[in-house]
Amino acid sequence: MPNKRLHIYSSGAVAPPIKKCAEEFTAKHGIDFEFTVGKAEELISEITELKHGDVLTCGAEFIFDEAQVKGLIFGETRRSVGYRRSAILVSKGNPKGIGSISDLAEKGMKVGIAIGGCLLGVWDEVSSKAGLTDKIRRNITEFADGCGAVVALLNQKKADAIFGWDAFQKLWPATIEVVDLPRELQVFRSTGIAVIQFSKQKETAKQFINYATSEKGKKIYRSYGWIHTTPEPHYIS
Image 1 (tube, one colour):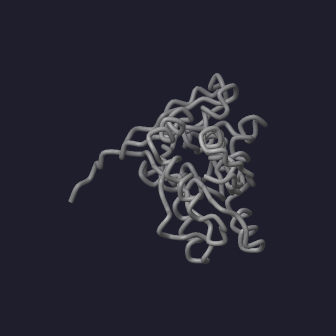
Image 2 (spheres, helix red, strand yellow):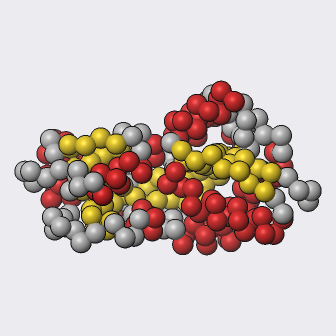
Image 3 (cartoon, rainbow, N blue to C red):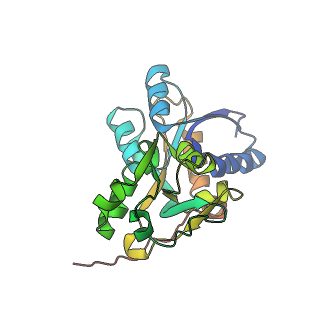
């Protein structure tokens, strides 16, 4: 395989495992990588403007739906590298003693949510399943524009709890803890990957995606908290 360079566009919270995949792919095939890491919305905007890049990876399928509709990715190359599971996240030591979703509905609780990126709407899905939407909504005091920003709310002591992914504990183990939700309240979202329409080395990009979604790639993602077994359905018609 000739020496080439792949440009990966990755949203922030999904960058660590894909960078590890790239490191191993480089060692095996001699391919160099360049990364642009940021908020999904900004990545979409930059790809649209520059008409550049080889691979896009982000933390929710709705982002790829938009990218496909805009003609930025090859739809047939879309793959999932794994799932992430929703959870309540609190500061290390859980100072408020939060143990369940109902605690977020208590008077005086400060809750943070993300209004952009892969966590868009997750608080609504979880709270609606619990039947606590009104009570939790009145406690939402902070709005963040992405994954890193919503975790920062805990570090800055602006929120007592946030809605996030349990995999975040692998990224910020020193500062956050996970309060698990019962299975019937959990939300799962797929982390996707696809070849960008403007790639001049589509076949190499597809080879890298094959590696990221192979058993070796899945092992890397599992080490960062991703899930690969499909959750068992609770409701079967």
